[in-house]
Image (spheres, rainbow, N blue to C red):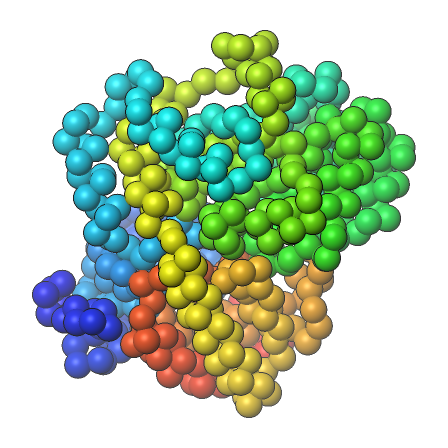
Length: 459
């Protein structure tokens, strides 16, 4: 099925005559076999392999608005949105035009450009950061923020929370579940114990644990880093006032508070998660990290914060950090076009879409007798297949992964592509029109029945 076959009227492209995609044919299977022969697991990021839900990942040929089309011509409503960046939907005209114009001028210079200045100015205008540096990935942003915090404070210990993911930085890939005052062990082979022995892992949303850790190690703690609203164990919002408590605790002990908004930045609101708590409560992190939306689908990220802290970076200060592709002109053009287009109407539409999906899920799952909890921050949400609210990593693991696998495949068979893991956030875009929303809602009853039948099983 070609792009022109789908019809792109005012409600957006759909399958032929509104039909759901045909069953998987050989294209994705053949490509997956080829990929496994030359790439570990056949993918370039683990969750894409479908290991958590089983089956063959769909290899996508193209995407427009809220729709994905795979190499076999099957079309799906996209509820991944590239894990967050596609706030405006795929191939948004303003972003495409900006990228084409930038690429025509050259893809990389290794020199400063006006575009990178403009993108930094746009981010500073939306957030409490005073100075910002561009990098190429969220992992690079958090790694650099940690190095800067250690260099600024002259301390070495880092505090993080179980279930919060900050990229594949060695020191932050620490095992969950360590004691309040016991330093961590590596959470993956290949990370030496020396890389995590200065990392403290605490249970999320636990004020007592934070207080105890700082009471014992406060004069050694360089920083505490947290996802502003965790989305990597599913969406687990901070308890009311929790982020403010973290900021105040760090300040009282001379540590820096690092808020990781790689996922939530410019998605939860125009000012990210900070716009919903810090801006209201009157506090700001010392350092912040950004990515995803600010790159408009291209590799771009950033870290920034207080001017006095950021001045410790080379060439002004002694803390070294550099990157050949940092501030890439094509990536900065995509990011600036995305932020410029992301006006109030965009956030309003995303909110309407998310509300409609959450309401439909709750009604349908309840009718099917499927235990569930829907948790959100802004339009970003997760569906936990459990019967109690989730406030921490340990509680997130109660979700029924077998039931989620059945849900995932039942939705996929009906033309809806959910995240292929029970522990991920669901994302929508301003391009999700009424027809895309209705296709999701129409798919829910059969999927809920399949998930209910699979409860308590194994995958």
